[in-house]
Image (cartoon, rainbow, N blue to C red; front, side, top):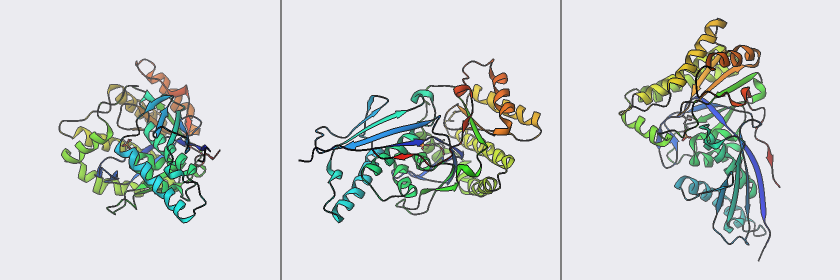
Length: 356
Ligand code: PMV
C-alpha cells in the first residue's frame, strides 16, 4: 500500500466584526439572519497555524491537536466541514484515476494559536478557517476563498470571514442550501493601511452564554431583534461599505459603535437577559468617549463580541492619543491588560499560503 504521508500547512487570521453576525435562520447550516462585515487583524499578532496530513499508513481515526492538546472532531459542525472537503476531493479522484485516494485516508490535524486560546479572543474564526484551508490545500481542491468560506461557515459562522484579509463582508444569502451565504472581499488591507486595532482583555474566562445559545435566545425572545436584523443592519452594511470605500474614519467609527451597542441591546432584551459586557467593558466605552470628546471628533471606535473584551479601532496617526490615553484611563482598573501593550495592524494581505 501507499505509505506516503501527504501534508499541507496554512495560517489564518482573526477577524473582528464591525457589523455583527447575530442570529441564525438555519442553525444546522449556520445561515445568518443578517449580513456582517469585519476587519481582519494582522497574522503577526493573532493567527492559527494548522498542518493537515493524511496517509494510508495512518491506522487511527481522524485526529486534531490544538496547542498539543487532543480535541474532538466528533461535533456535527466539524463533521460537516470534513465531509464537504472529502466529497470535493473524492470528485477529483473520480475524474482522474491517477490521483492518490486521499479522501479515504485518516487525517491528522495539528493546530497552534500564537495567542492564548483561553484569552476570550475570537479563536474559533481563525481556527476553522485554518482547518478548512489546510485540508483544501492538502486535497489540492481548485477552490477560491469564497468557495472555502461556504465550508468554513458550517464550522463557525464568523470563520467564513477569516478566509480573506482586509475588509470582508459575509453575505447572508437567500437560498435554503446556503450556497449563496459566503464571504467576499470589500477592500484589501492595502486600501486603508493606517487602520489599527488594540484589544483590551477584560476577562480571560470562557463566556457564560455561548454564541449559538445566545443567538437562539435572541431570535426567540428579543422584541428588538427583528428591527435590527431586517431593517437596521441592511442599512448599516451599505453605509459601512461607503465609509470604507471613502476611508471616512468618523463614519466607520460611528457605525461600528452603534452596531456593537445595538447588538448588545438585543442581548439585554432577551428573556432572561444575556449580559456579555461587564463594568470593565463599560469603563472602556467611557474611555473611548472621553478620547473622542478630547479630540473633538471620533478617532477611536469600540466594539464588543459575545464577551467583555473590547477591540478599539483607530488610525495610526492617532496612536499616541488612543493607545496612550487608554493606558492612563484604565491603569487603575483591575483586570485590564492591553494585548502586547501595542497596536495590532489590520492584515495587509490575504493569508499566507504554503504547501509543504
Ligand atoms: O461565529 P460564532 O458562532 O462564534 O459567532 C460570532 C458572533 C460575534 O462574534 C458576536 C459577531 C461576529 O460577527 O463575529
